Length: 322
Ligand code: TXA
Ligand code: MG
View 1 (cartoon, rainbow, N blue to C red):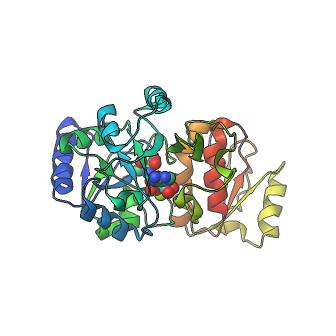
View 2 (cartoon, rainbow, N blue to C red; view 1 turned 135 degrees about the vertical axis):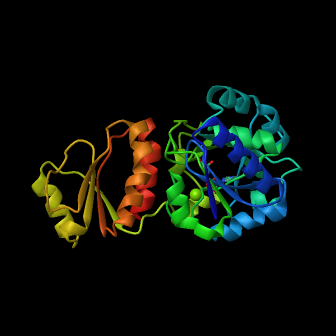
View 3 (cartoon, helix red, strand yellow; view 1 turned 90 degrees about the horizontal axis):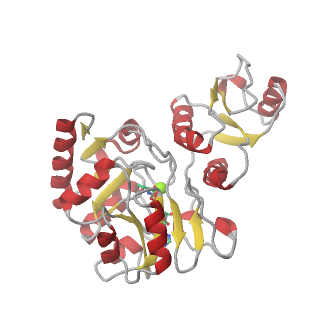
């Protein structure tokens, strides 16, 4: 497996050229996006898309997001482009919003898991934009981790998770958003997966109301290896008591706090994430990956604040706690 860096214009250009060469040949490439790293393949090539499922160990019934680099390309992937889609795209694209719409005939069944809809997103990451433009076709890409594991937010996470299962990894630095995109079903007017872009559906049901429409949301997801507990405490002594009552050794416990920082030297580690939803999202997965690397047994998370911007974070923490 080869890792290509992108931090100078010359390296960036070589990486775009090389990634496009692999993608045009029907191979998969791990690529940076502003949300999390993706495992990309030509979205119009069924055989290439099947490789994504193999590399991830992903069940075939879980559809993929199609990444585009223009409105025009998005519209070629969908069978219908309602005014609401236009408004949302104008407001949030390029960015961390995925729109679910009726599919067009150019999208293979492998991408949609045989369904009648397709998920499309125009990412803002400059590498993604450049490589999609160079290819001239859209890229199907799930997060670049093995199925049910944590999403990667830097190239090292990808290398650790996928290793030689991918021929090429593009290092585009740390993901600036840090959690997966908001997935919004346009015709149904509902949020299927909350993210950093806060949207509310007309039924105000949000992700938990009514029947689950996003197959991926059925799976245990976004999980670190350690047990994760979300709680509140007023003193270091209380935080300590919570870990001990749950049956964990303090030195195998890592704390993630934003307000009441327990300065107890017996904890394996105490990480502070700022009480700001964007900064929190950016840091969260890196903290969970660090806990895995340190073979932590318990991650004790101070319950974050509520509010629309925090919904995606609560959603990921709930899944990680499962
Ligand atoms: O930020 C992101 O969305 C990242 C980057 C790489 O773009 N991608 C990502 O992909 O998180 P993935 O495959 O890990 O999650 C995609 C989610 C899954 O829950 C999937 O079930 C849902 O989107 N999805 C995809 N197509 C869908 C469709 N047609 N209808 C409903 N849900 C869909
Ligand atoms: Mg994923």
